[in-house]
Structure formats: structure tokens, C-alpha cells
Length: 128
Image 1 (spheres, rainbow, N blue to C red):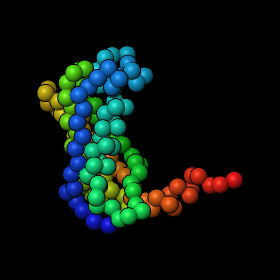
Image 2: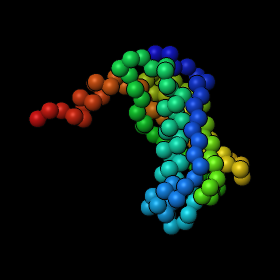
Image 3: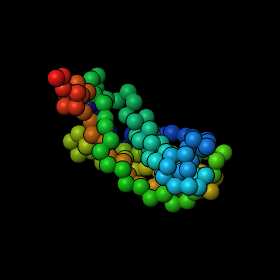
Image 4: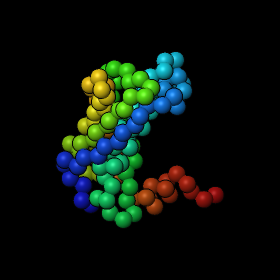
């Protein structure tokens, strides 16, 4: 496993109607919804790990801790960055930030666990 402190990943999105709190059912305002923001944070962490895990390995989300600080309107671009800051065995923690033209929109941490895909899938998909 070539996972190392300092790995970075990024995701970007131009906010559309389908990305809003109203569309996602997490509110009734036409701004970037927190569930979509969480997905962008996770996407950036997965991007950081692209090409560094061993064959047969993947990572799964374990914990998301964020503060959604300001609204991002439809049509604005949000840029999410993930930076690997801590490794504890198979558990890895990223610091994540999201910024738009108004500045910092959200920040927090995302923890993922590196898994063997076959073993992981055998725990949830047992044949009857």
C-alpha cells in the first residue's frame, strides 16, 4: 500500500438544480445541499487514493464531520480539496475544504477505511 500523508485529491462542481437542498430533500432553499457537498468531499478523498491502493483494495467511508459555513448558489462553481493528514493502520483521515467565489463554504474531516474488496463484499452479500 502506497498511502502516505500529504496525498491530495480534488473535485469540482457547477451547482445545478439537482444539487440543491430542495432537490435533495435536505431543505427548501435553492442552494447547494449539504448531502451533495458530502458526496463531493468523499469524491475528492477517493480521487486522492486513485492509483495508490494495491490491486483488490478499495476504501470505504467511515465518518464525515463537516461544517457547512455559507451557501453556494445555482450556477456557482464549488471546488473541494482533500488532504490526507492521518494514517492509523487501515483507517485514514483527510482534512477537506470547499470553496466558491465567496470564499470558504465548508470544512471538515473525512475518515475512510482501506478494505480488501472480496472480504468486504463477503460480509454483506452472503449467498443463501
